[in-house]
Length: 467
Image (tube, rainbow, N blue to C red; front, side, top):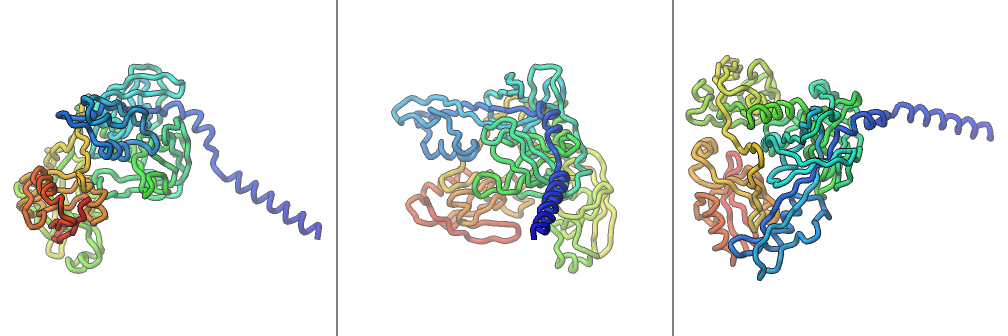
């Protein structure tokens, strides 16, 4: 009996040793490349009131909830009493970044420095520098900043196209303000498409990423940066096992344009696309579900000029296969405006080649130097809205309405989603955001209002409970 116990204990010890031996050791990587990671503090002066009216406590709390880690509201940041004169309150938030050149160029997320009046960079040796924002691109959530320093340690840029699902990665950053924190995990997936991002094929990992990690590097086991930690999927505001990083090749392309041009240029076709499912593939006679199905062609767009038609399925763009519909916007956006591209489309149950001169995508918001203060605060029902231009109305197939940019609070609870177009409030057609706000104010005494919402090809009334 004693011999059996001894044999079992020996087996357990050996297997434990073998298991531990196979686990990766990150110590050398962190020691060598940890100094390339920086802590970034952004300070924005927020007016406590305008036109004699102080910002409400609810609005201020909403600002902190959206843009700062939980529990990080600074002392004195609450709005002053209503009878005090308006003043500016410094609001600070923390993020991460990493050095890409010895002369002080640093990559981070656009949302880390967006709207900042002052950006401070802290190195691992505790030196601090005032940083200049070279440029910021909202569409990719990439920003390039610079500090006046030399002989700085720099990261090694990796190749995201060589990433394998299941390989080990580590994230370094400042979660909740805890500087130079290291977490590890594996690559869960590549080429992920998120609803609000059309131009980034995200790397999904299970490395713990939290508020404050934004802008920090994602390293592979060779010590190469393969991505910028950018987003988490969470119901609590903290890590839940789903983290997303911007591939470093995408980020470096953006950074190069920001450095040389001060803005990012992207290609444009002018089409509305949707996924090809099994039913559509069968209906169109496709061998398999693949490609991007054209459900709309903007008048006067590069696509219309090239002869693209509603019902076409784009299978290849510039020699690259379109497996999923979200592949197309990325490939088109990466194409230089004015250049010629060849497309293979599926039309009338047969392939067809079409040449197109790629247009230029209008600037959504590109900041050069100090970013403009364009942060939108949700209205009282939780909506951030945008007016719809003539070209968008044609593309969306509507004559009026406002587009939902963000939805939270009462609006999100009612089922209103980003991308929806609100056509009417209680049967009154909506022409612009200002009119929508006016109609909402007039309906303040009602318990519910009916919003006529267009989502894709469908139009539906959604009852909204007034707060």
